[in-house]
Each structure stands twice: as C-alpha cells, then as structure tokens.
Image (cartoon, rainbow, N blue to C red; front, top):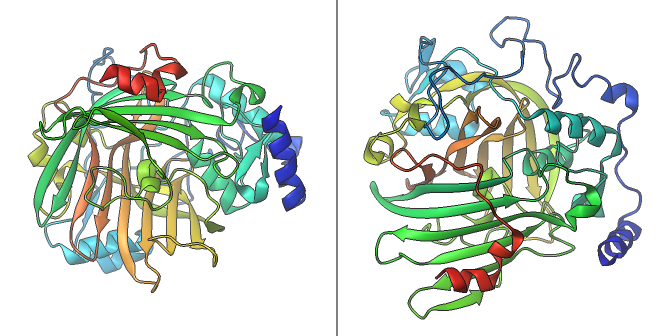
Length: 444
C-alpha cells in the first residue's frame, strides 16, 4: 500500500506519465522487429546480417563448462590500429579511438558480425506485454506497468533506453567466482570474490505488484588476497532509487563488525578499486538516472566489443589478459553492430565525477557495450567497455569482462576474470533473507 501511495505522490509532482506505445506498434515485435525491439533485418550493405534467433549451444558444450567459442573459425576481416584509425573514426567511440591512438600496442581485431543475443521465451512474452503497458513515472526515475521483460522495446527517448539496459535479462539467481584487477602504473593488483546475485525483476512469474520496488539483491565475499580475505558486502537494490534508496552493508574481518554504508550509489567510490571505479559504473551503468538529462541521439552502426568468447576460455593466465596499459588485444573481438547512442548530461543542480557520458547500447540485447566519459571541462577522461557473450544454456547475453580506462592517468580497472575459476552457477537456491545484514554477520 505504501508503495502505491508513494508512486501516486510522485506522479502528482511530475505530471503525466510517459505515453505508452499502441498495440499496432507493439505488433511489430517478433515481425519486422525482434522480440526485444531490434531491427530484424540486416543492413543494406550486408555487413550486418539479419537476426535469426541468436546463437545456439554447440554440441561440444555441457553444463558447467566455460563456453566454447561458436565462432572460433571466423577469419579476421581487418585490423584497426594507430596507422589507420582515422579511416574508421566514424565507427568508433571517442574513447576507443583515443585508446588506439595512445597505445601503439593496442588495436582492434574486427570479425564478421554475429547477432548472437537471445533471451528466454518468457522474457520475449513479457516484453510484448510491457510494450503497451510500461510508463515512466517520477520524472523518469521509476517505471510502472512492467515486469520481467524489457520495459520499452520501442523507446521514445533516452531515459527509456537506459531503463531497458538496467532491466535487461541477466539471469535469476547466480553464483559467480571471479577476479578484478586494478592496474596502477602498469602493475595489476588482483582481488578474488565469491558473488551471489538474486534478481527480483526478471524472475519467472514476477508481476508488478510482487516487485515491491525491489530490483535485485547482491552479496560478495573477498577470498584473496589474504589481507582482504573475509571482507564482505551485501546490497539491496531498489527499482526506483529516488523513492527508496539502495541499502548496503559491509563486513570487516578486522573488527568483525557489520556497518551500514552511508552511500553506495552515483559517484561514491566502489570498494577495493583504488578510486578508479564509481558505484554506478557496475554493469556499465546502474542505479537512479535522476542526476542526468538523457538525450536519445539515434541509432548508429559502430565497431563494438562482441562475442568475446576468446578472452572467456578456461585456463588463460590472468597476466596474459591484463597487460600494463590495456587488455591483451589478441584476445578481444570487435564487430560492426547497430547501437542506440544516448548522451547523459549532468543536471545543473547535481554533482558527479562525470559531467557527461555517451552510451552505446546494443540493439539486440540492450546491454551497454561502451561509454565515453567526460569531466566538468568537457575533456574526455575515460572509456568503459563491456565484452559480452551469450551464456547460451540460459540463454543470457551479458558481459564476461568489464573495463574502465582512466585516459588521464593511464590506469585501468577490469572486472570479471574467471578463466581459472568454476563457471557461473545458474541454479543456486537463494532467498532474499540470504542478503540481510544479519546473514552477512552469520556467514562471517
């Protein structure tokens, strides 16, 4: 009841909700548009093929494996490096071009475009319902009329596009053991974490009334290095973070106490990243959109990290992936894809490390693939990249590695290194009570 009253009060403050699309527009889903709203057809030149349902699990795969590369036999089309980067400038995010120009040892290996993204049928069905029911409320800081699927598969503005990313399907309950690396002055510092994620919005059978303004629960425990081992964090994430803020607690093994964090949102420092990463760069962007104006620039064909199975393979030493200035380009794959381009500009009454961001969002999955980051002087200061694969047994299209390059200082941060760890578990049995501060104290 309190949630409904809060929504009504917010609506009274901001006027009418964003208009829905009509049934005729929604009928395009699964026809000339894919079930999630991308253009089904390829491009005129044939360099982007039609979407035919996404990648299928290869015969060589069995549950629990690191995912074999279904495109391992693809031949490289061309390479973009410092010598020819100007030729491809219109196809590159500004930050990616800067990375190529700055480091002669970094380049892009460009391969044929493979539209591998897919999601479960129930996500497609929910998206069709959301298309005619979902609305923005509270000046874009919340939504109503949506659950489980993409809320705005036919987006009308940039705020709707960013909500599509925030709510795109990333599984239901997952255990992840992986590593992050902070690379300072060319030297990597690794942290290993055991993570649990319990999605509320994307759960099977979820309805809007059942959400209770909850997006997901998240918990991790550091297991290496020894000096940080036992440090733990739990997060309860809300759907509308302006109406009810994110809650987070951190456990310190030094004093064996659980403390409520005053803030783990916006540009508050992300723990254990040496100040390189803000809280809202996890999954390329998360949290409340209220500090920015979101402008939908349009859709463009761009060279993007995609089908990053090579860097995902089991047994690769982490130092073979994490080099002194960038990730190892020989393990990365770039393809030409259509992306939604969205500019986020800081509103005058707010502060943030990044005054402006330009997002490049995959039309097939709504996963953010790259972000250009600018400071208050308009200077390009950073680049984020998401290197995604289709976890085809789910199916789920999500990043296997995320990077953030500090273009001013030459340092960078990478998260998701799991080549020498057990593969994700998608069938763990979790409950919301497992993500309480009491559980954090009990587990440690």
